[in-house]
Image (tube, rainbow, N blue to C red; front, side, top):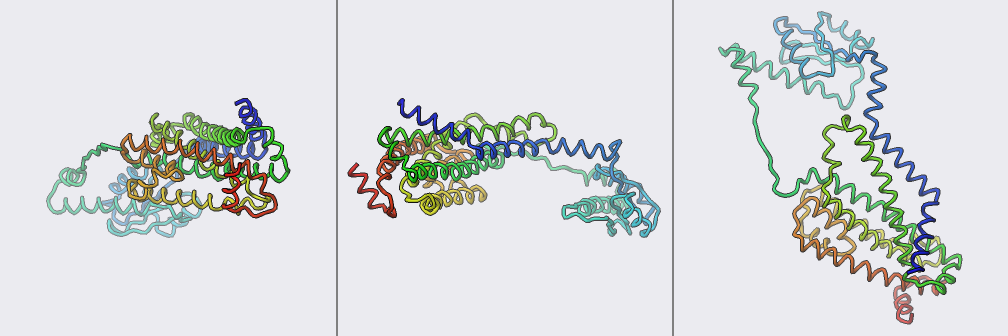
Length: 408
């Protein structure tokens, strides 16, 4: 236990003193803080540019004077971000006002069924014509009803009928929990690929520098392997806490600017606990595998090739889960099977827990299998680490590794 503590402290200090680790963490923290403050920043700059907060001008030129005020009132109600003005100018004068910056856009109405929309720079996200179509369609229907004998009040009552409905989910709300699930899966994906590769590289570096030979003779390989993996896990968790903690704090400081996003930051406590359990166990599984593979590499340059099967396995699991999430069917046969396979269950079972209703005994079985697999793979990886020192100058083969383990 004393050896394990020393190794854990040494490896963790190496991570925390690594300039790349610190740089990436600071970059992510600053970038996400800027994203969360972006609405406040944009409001500040837009406020300065507009002086008294004036809205851009939308012109309405109408060939039918009897409909002019009605159209202006309707457009002013739906285009609240504009100052809607009536104009008697001809189309050429309207175009000149837009190009000169006096107005941002204009609708030249030929009737309630036809108009021309003018704008200086047409954005790919400009939805003004779509909104105008809906408004003019409603006005046309109202006028048609009035012309056919209905009073304006009766026409308005008919057109303004709202359909009331209520949706009650008796299980999980997939849309609400999709955000949590996607963040956890993506974070696990990034952390495993990044820190798993770092574990493999560190082990291979020790081997290439002959430091492994000295370490093996002075420390228990199980303590060494578990110390390295747990240190990398702690470093990854610290980085995630710094990043997501920044997002949470910045969100609370700018809550009013992110209206409608509150539910994404109110994760249920039990879901957070499951996320933590599956995240840590899933990380351990792959980190031990990366460490074992790193100890068998003959050269540092061989690391990428050696860990390729593990990386491909993890990417396949990631793709299966993402496809199931986006399809909305997270309880399909493939996901159920993957929920009990140690290499896929951290992502598959958590996704099912977050987006479906899973019996507790299934969750318990999956966690027990994961814990047993972590211990088994950890001990096996320690043995591979111990015999890896003997595999110099030869291409590592599974048969040779297993034979060396049996003799160890």
